[in-house]
Amino acid sequence: MLLNKILEKKSKIGVFGLGYIGLPRCIQFAKKNFKVLGFDNDRKKLEKLKNKKSYLTTVQNKDLIALNKSKFFPTNDLKLVKTLDIIIICLPTPLKNNKPDLSYLRKTLKSIIQYLKEDQLIVLESTSYPGTTEEEIIRPLKSKFKIGKNFFICFSPERDDPGRLIDTYKINRLISGKSSKCKNLGSKLYKQIFKNVKIMNTIEEAEMSKIYENVYRAINIGLVNELKKICHKMNIDFFKVIEGAKTKPYGFKAFYPGPGLGGHCIPIDPFYLTWKAKKFGITSKFIELSGEINNSMPNWIVLNIEKYFKNTKSQIKNKKALILGVAYKKNINDTREAPSLKIIDLLIKKKCKVHYSDPYIKKLKKFRNYKFQNLKSINLSKKNLKFYDFVVLVTDHDKFDKKKILNNAKLIFDTRNFFKFNKSDKVISL
Ligand SMILES: NC(=O)c1ccc[n+]([C@@H]2O[C@H](COP(=O)([O-])OP(=O)(O)OC[C@H]3O[C@@H](n4cnc5c(N)ncnc54)[C@H](O)[C@@H]3O)[C@@H](O)[C@H]2O)c1
Image 1 (spheres, rainbow, N blue to C red):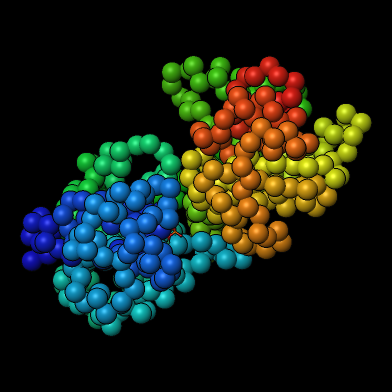
Image 2 (cartoon, helix red, strand yellow):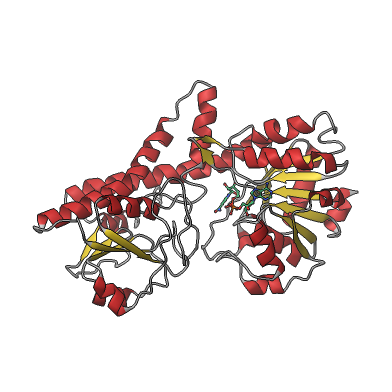
C-alpha cells in the first residue's frame, strides 16, 4: 500500500522540473532516505547534476555530492515513470502574451500518461489559477483511473523564497487532494519534509491561497512604489517614513519600494487569476493597477536619472553607466523578469554606454525581446567604479562592498536604500 511505503520511506519519488523549486525538493526527500529521480528536459542541467555541479545559488555542490546515485538520480527517461510511486510536478507556469502558459504541464502529462499506473500519487506544486489541478490533471486522467480511489492527486503550493535564509522545514505547508485518501497520502508525504502541514478542504482553496499570497505582495509593493513616487515629489524620504510607520505594533506590515518586480512569481501569478476571473466576467482591478505601477518603476527611475542630469546642466546622452546587480532580488542568480533588464534597455535607448556588475551572474542570458546581448559582468574594482559617470544600484546583494562603491563611484542612484541614510551628496535615492 502506498501509505505504508510513504511512512517507511520506501516510496520512489519522481520530481519533474529541476529548477529553483524542484531541485531543492529532490534533495529534501533524498536526505530523508527516499529514492528520488529528478526529471528535466534540459540536458545541460542533467549533465551538471551528474557531475555533482549545481547551477543554482540556493543549492550547494556539497548537497549533491552527499547524495549517491541510489538516493538521487537525474534523468529524462520518461519510461522510468512506471517505476515511480509518487510524481511531483515543479514545472514552470509563466505568462505568454499576458496569458497563462500551461504548455509545460500539458506536454509533460501527455508524454507520461502512457506510463502512469494504479496506486500512484501525483502532486502539483506549480503555481496556477484555481481549477488548474482539476482541469489539467484530474480531467485527462479520469477515463484511465478512479481518481481518489485507485489513483491519487494532490495540489501543494510552493512557498519558498529563494535566497532567504530560512529553514525550509519550518515553512508551513498547505496541501489538498481530490479525496480524503488523496489528502491523507499527500499530507503524510509532506510531513516527512515539513514540520507543519495544513490540509485544505478543497484543491481550489489551496490553489487560491497561493495566488492570494502573491497578489497580497504584488499589491502592497505597488502601493509602496506609488507612495515612493509621491514622497519623491514632496521631498520626503519614504524609507524614513517606513521606519516610523513600522513601529506600530499591530495592523501594519512593512513593504519596501524598489526598481520594480521580478522573478517567476510576483509579476506573473496574480495575472493567472486576472485571466481566470475574466472567464467569470470579473475584472481584477487591484491586480491590474499594481501591475501597472510596478511595471512603471524602471521607466520612472531612468526618467529621474535623466532629470537629474538636466537639472545639473548636463545630459544623460553618452554617459557611461554601471548597473549594480541584475538579479531580480538579492543574493541569487535569477534574472527572470528582472527590472534591471528594462533599466539597461531604457538607458541604452537614451544613448548611454551600459555595463553591469553582479557577483552571481557572469553573463546575461537573452530574455524576451531585449536587444542587448553578450553583456558580461565586470569586476567591481576601484578603477572600474571610477570609470563610470554613474552607477545604479538595482539589486542589493550582500556581497557588494558598500564602502568601496561609496568611495569610488562618481554618482550613485540607489533604488533600494542600500546605502541607508547615507549623507553623501553623491547618493541619490530613487
Ligand atoms: N522560483 C520561485 O521562487 C517559486 C516560488 C514559489 C512557487 N514557484 C512555482 O514553482 C514552479 C516552478 O518554478 P521554478 O522557479 O522552479 O522554475 P524553473 O524554471 O527554475 O524550473 C523549471 C524546470 O523545469 C524544467 N522543464 C521545463 N520543461 C520541462 C519538461 N517538459 N520536462 C521536464 N523538465 C522541464 C526546466 O528545464 C527547469 O529546470 C512555477 O509554477 C513557479 O510559479 C516558484
